[in-house]
Amino acid sequence: MSRERVLDLVGLVCRLALGGVILAAGLLKVTDPTGSIQSVVAYRLFDYQVAEMIGLMLPVIEVALGLVLILGLLTRWSALAGALLMLAFIAGIASAWARGLSIDCGCFGTGGPVDPDDTAYLEEIVRDAALAAAGLWLVVRPRSLFALDTLLFRRPPAPTDTDPASPHTSSSVTKGAS
Amino acid sequence: MPRPTVKTAPPPKKGPSMGLIGGVVALVVAIIAVAVYIAVRPDPVGDGDSASITGGGASSPSALPGAGGIRVGTGGDDVPAVHIYEDFQCPWCGLLERTSGEAFIEAAERGEIQLTFTLMSFLDGNLGNDSSIRSANAAMCADDQGRFVPYHQALYADQPEEGAGWTDEDLIGIAEQVGVEDIDAYTGCLDDEKHFDYIRDMQTRSNQEGVSGSPRVFIDGEELGGEDMNALMYDPTALTDILAARQ
Image 1 (cartoon, rainbow over the protein chains, first blue to last red):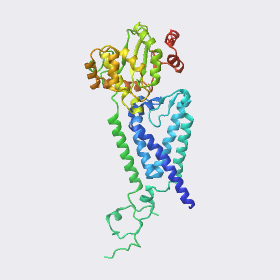
Image 2: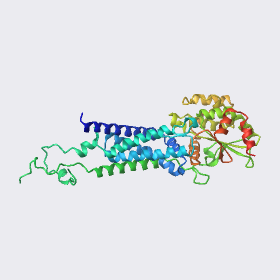
Image 3: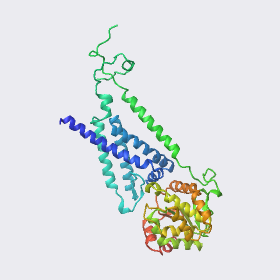
């Protein structure tokens, strides 16, 4: 296997790890709006109105972002969004930790208070940091195996017998083509 | 008219541009997220006339307006206001009730504290059942017939393992056990899900007030810390000490 192909494989692993976790987190919360809102309230960072908005909209965004990452669509930008999301989560968890709150991160559904001995802030931060790193890899080197991007944007179209003067061709933007 | 051959074809054709796809995807996601927010957002609960509580008909006799909770006992505004936030499916709430429940109720009935229970229902979403809201409704249906306190106690006395929940038969059986007289009316109250709106509003109000879990105990608006909570869960006399310490 060539070096390029190994790097593409690493890209695939990063995509699936980041996308898979974000998708799972979104799916688990999207069916439980009450728990999702309450998990955000537990951080005591936002007014209720804002917490409610985040609690209801974040899971939808996570599901979409997870799917886009798994499909490998617009990898650089979706990975950037995923990495930024992870950094935001790390900030939230760290702030809960620093303030001495005893909460579950609520990453995968109902969070909220837990026994002080059961908090797992460090594990949660390490996990999110690893996922942020996976995202940053893809920002730097978005190419990966089995990505929709490859089909849509990178591979020059194979010569075909279709009429090159078709409207599709004539209207397409060629700026920046390699 | 001669056509260019395939081999000399102009630059490779591209599909829709990356920016266009990205913009469309982002827009669609944003629209869905906003639609979900608008559709799922719980009605805000308040004390004023904007509250979603429709009034006396929707709640039980001891239920305070504005989803303020279930008032127990005779304590007025001149004694410490004790507010307990709980979910009938929460094991720690069960422990709290089995250890200190009697102390709370007795103090409330002697008029030494003003006791309020807010029945939360967030564990339904977590556990994937509907026993929190159904048992809260069952307790309020018992309140309709003046039996909230014994019902509350009996629910926790026989609390199933977390997640197992209660069947309607269980809930009716508890009603018979605590002396709810009109079982037909009681069963109708369960079937009609009579107090569900009020219970959902209690959950929303809890979150509005920053309560994000159960059990929580507030005395005069001040949340009890871990040490006091621990004491209440393991020592039946703890409430006396906690109240004395606040004098």
